[in-house]
Amino acid sequence: EDQVTQSPEALRLQEGESSSLNCSYTVSGLRGLFWYRQDPGKGPEFLFTLYSAGEEKEKERLKATLTKKESFLHITAPKPEDSATYLCAVGSNYKLTFGKGTLLTVNP
Amino acid sequence: EPEVTQTPSHQVTQMGQEVILRCVPISNHLYFYWYRQILGQKVEFLVSFYNNEISEKSEIFDDQFSVERPDGSNFTLKIRSTKLEDSAMYFCASKAGTDNTDTQYFGPGTRLTVL
Image 1: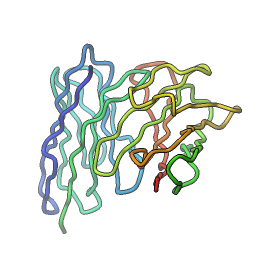
Image 2: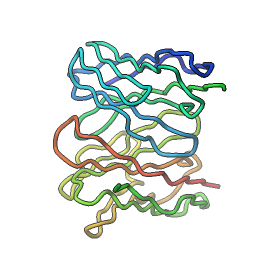
Image 3: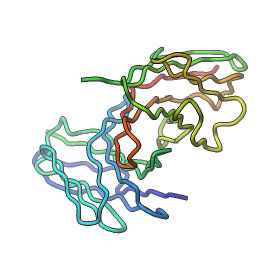
């Protein structure tokens, strides 16, 4: 059974203070690792898909990386509008298995 | 930009009543999903649907749950006899292709409250 563990559960940053979120996973065979952003009361919003160890993807202030056991979401010079819960999931055609997420708060 | 839509945004029902949650997936997508998220907990997979049949379902998806694609655009989740513990956000998602790395796009959710 696929398992996803995210850390930390919550992270509070000052605007401009860079940091990283961690997602460790256990799967029988990685078929895709996905990062989503979720705002309160909303559905998950897609950010990145990673598949191969060593792969990196970037979007604005976010960069996602992947190793054989974990993925990192690096946030560079965050702004208050980056405040959200960041979800990591592993998946196949049939389902995604999510972690509990990291609640990121960026203070101005 | 195409998006998944869900109705209603909030449904309140009495325990034991039937509810139907509705979703319109992105046009031309092939895979459809339902997930739920109990307040403060993680997003949990319920069921996937492809080629007019269930592809996979979780232990949560018991005989009280059913899914249907009644026409070319809608995808529904029915809960036959709601329980208090069914209170959650229910998310519909859809995916375009058959590749494992294709993205699942989520709708805004339906908040179900069972009294």
